[in-house]
Length: 162
Image (tube, rainbow, N blue to C red):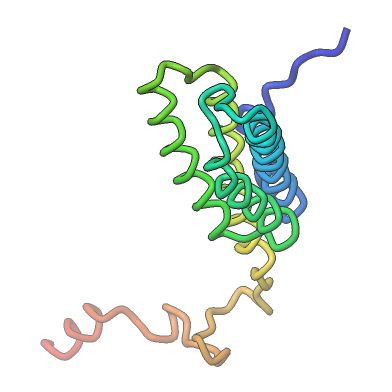
């Protein structure tokens, strides 16, 4: 029997590959939300009555979840990740008022949080450039003097006081 790994609950993100994986998991969550919401909205249109509290007014939610999924999967978009969390927190608040919040709601929120972590880490790791040496450089890439070369400021004051 396969062993359930706890790595999905809070995955370690240590490079671009693991960051992209976390972001793609959030994209899958957004796709699931879009598909289920879309199917229920389509059923409500077909039946001409609300189904599970959703009707044709849920179509914008389907479009939003679809755009979030595309932004996360294709672009590793930080904006899409943050919008996903904010959107889902609003959805959770409405579900809590109606008494329809359940474990799936929390799992999807966790997936969206992974998306935020993954997209920000992805851009951080992708933009990282290894330093050319162990010497300090300024924003223009010019070498800066080391601490030893600068000397200790109090040492200079003590010598001038003598």
